[in-house]
Length: 251
Ligand SMILES: [Fe+2]
Ligand SMILES: [Fe+2]
Image (cartoon, rainbow, N blue to C red; front, side, top):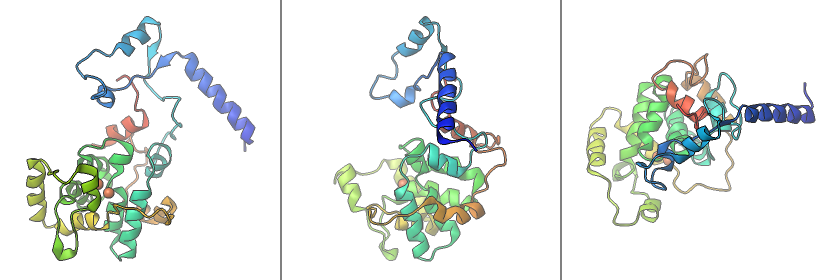
């Protein structure tokens, strides 16, 4: 067992070694698109090369280092933003007596928003988890992208008040979202996707504390964690997890 100060020393040594290697992280075009015209050349890249430094191809020392075989929980702890919305949605699904399938779907439905990309987040989240969860869970996560915009009074789902605040009262989704909604409505798993929206806690309660540990068992039974670690299992989603692990690699 290392003492706290030994661990701090080791960390400092590692960081200075990483810096000695003179490698510089580069932001992908997507990360800066909008703030910057994406068609413009990335000047920081040529600046790095002119200095004689190399481009980063591994861990970014500004980020906490992930274990060699990272788990879903490691990503929650070391890469994802605050997860209260997901934890509280999953808690609500549990309180409402839903199956573990629905609870895990609620727990994971917005992981793209907290860890990867916001736009089309339902599709990205589904792509991230599809190799590791039941097919119905991935389908439901994808479909919540469209379903959340459309009320279903029969089961008590109304258009979220917060969406009026977020997007304005005149907002209406793109035609492709209507088409996705229609297809989801007619799908045999419609209710699974709908239950995500019904337990999606738009206004979360700051008084309620939910911990990820409350869901360890449910994750264990419903998320097939690859032995090689997320990102290293050659699944169709592995590259997404690697990109989250190492977001500033040059290639
Ligand atoms: Fe969502
Ligand atoms: Fe959500």
